[in-house]
Length: 78
Image (cartoon, rainbow, N blue to C red):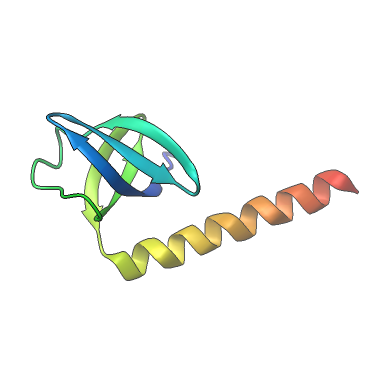
């Protein structure tokens, strides 16, 4: 199974972009989403933006990721 995470595009430089992945910034490739613009959301897998996604879907997905991270941290602290 492959997992992609939602990220918001912060900056674009030709075939790369800086994105915000749940509060962490990273550089990714954007060759598969040539029309992406700053402010849009993408699904990132293996360092590449795979598709542009709807903002509402991205926000829901980010909240679910945050919930899973908090749950993991709470269980790990027990």
